[in-house]
Image (cartoon, rainbow, N blue to C red):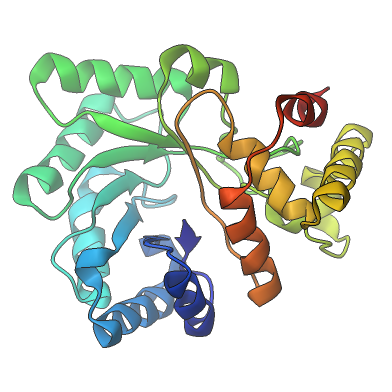
Length: 271
């Protein structure tokens, strides 16, 4: 799945290679959604693409922001719906019932095909799902939290949530993993403050080294191995990727089709 923080040239290559899903958000601003809308309009392929939209990001993480933000996204995207609508953040001070009703209203109106949650804890997700089920409202079909072969040491942004693989495996709740390649950690990103704070640790450096060894043996990039590890987890998993150039896009595409041996998966995941 591609994020809209990219360039149309990369989107073109992504689609030509079989990519059919774009992840967008009102929080990303008008320009990126307008670019994506124009791209899809020019190609005439909206019906062949899955759009994942996100609304209600902090500081506008409130139920009443859902509809106007989605309407603005739809206007820029030049479409009448997103296929999956996620709440971008959570505010634990707001009763889940209010968020349930806000998302259900968009699905009922046809402006969203399905609903999900992003950066919500497993406990709040369960509370949302329980309330929706009890009242016959739209239940969340996916949880979108951060997960990658490298463990996020500190949240990249305040309020972010890291996925709990054990919970996903137990409940089989689908995961839409953002920063699935640790924000360039496996792609040779130059060390900076964010990398040091959120990703640099002896354990993560060891995982990256092991990914490099597997990659060298298979003739692929380490980022492809990191992505293949994620997609092989024992629960439904999709990965949001944001390649900066064609080389990184090719590594993502290779990772999406790469099947690692059980011994490699075990070795990569060793803590």
